[in-house]
Length: 151
Image (tube, rainbow, N blue to C red):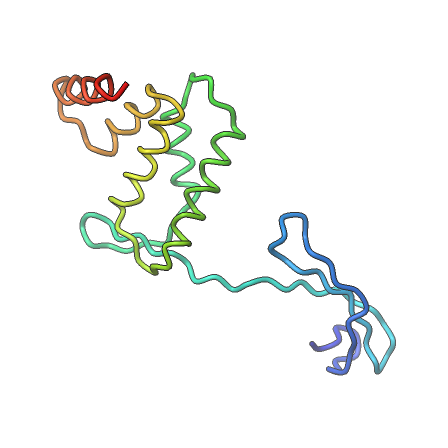
């Protein structure tokens, strides 16, 4: 690690600590040349998960896009922001844990619907209506019947 003050690379680590969420290491260093101290942060370089869309396009997994869809589905429902954030964390972790670099959007949508189904039936139907592109009321009725039969 190059000293930001004198540019030399000889330094020693005098303190290391994990961040609050345990995914970054903060290191306090001291330059052996000029004696000044500086801080560095070490984190795992993650390869982004690519989502393969229905039309074959590929785009990087976008947590904000997923959040927006979930929030719209949960609008005016008794679902806390913390629940939505935990939901997002779990979804993102699940996708990364597959070990796949490319994941079909259908897999992401189905996982979201499964989790929404457990959280709130109305939010689930709202999300499903957009995700599955319901064409008319019959599609809604069919989904609702399916939902009621599961309970």
